Amino acid sequence: MQLSVLDLVPIIEGGSVGAALEQAAELARTAEALGYHRYWVAEHHGMEGIAGGATAVVLAHVGHATSTIRIGAGGIMLPNHSPLVIAEQFGTLDALFPGRVDLGLGRAPGADQRIVQALRKEVNRAAENFPNDVVELQLQFTGDARLPLQATPGLGARPQMWILGSSLFGAQLAAMLGLPFAFASHFAPDHLDAALTLYRDRFTPSATLDQPHVMAAINVLAAPTDEEAILLASSMDQSFVRLRSGSPGRLPPPIAGYRDSLPPPARAMLDHMRQVSAIGSVATVAERLAAFQARTRADELIVAGATFDPAMRRRSLALTMEAVALLTAELAA
Image (cartoon, one colour):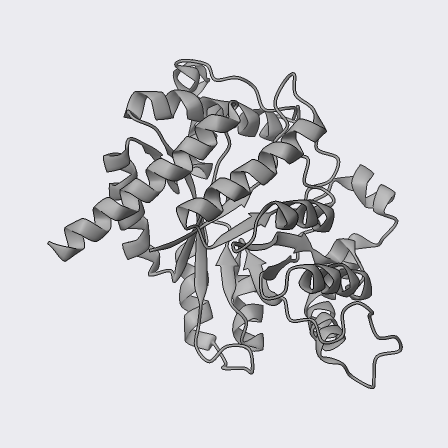
């Protein structure tokens, strides 16, 4: 079971952007030492509790703090940018960290109307043009005489490109272009099974990939006991409920019995959106990872999550690897 790490670079209550970025580097170093395959950062804008908005800059910081783990965007929301600029950014990263850079591309702008205005782009129209922009970005890396301007850095760079999705659209595009596909089931579980089936059924081999390659995201928080894991996970539960209630903020400290304190509609919403999760002891996490792997038949899993105390996330990564070792031992027995 190949595991990777998705990090939103959370800013905790009472914390700072600088501290969040240092903790991101420490988390990536821990993941590298434990044998995780990739460390990805997701692009978000105007979020008080997320420090990863300048994704390429964060990846440069993390790249210099590590030496072997793959680093990448999970993902860049391409409608927010021109393909030329992303080619320059990731061409630079590829020059700095050759053979280690991933470029996951998403179609959703991930922005409300205030941010759309601040970006000064017609984001909805750009989202409609997403497939063409993905192809243009590929050509910026490989070179093409039809381009009016060639990216430098960019030409000749070889970041591993992925299509990200939370619906069927991304699955279709990844299949058509012959690219690896990552599904955001950690927050959008509804279309997981249909999207993976569609991607595999319609996949067209390309120069990049000769057969389908799937990564699926799952919320994971491992602790010595189920009770402690549930308590620690209450920080990200609070953050998610606040986001969906229109009052996002920084990552709060854990609260005992948080889910039980919610009104039924809020708890139902949270339970639905967090259904793809493995939260508990090593044994519990092993059981749920095995079930998710059996369900998705994913080539890779990427673990999402956040804790108020960054050391608890690092501990969770270590315990999650213990869970994988437990599964491996069971299969070998």
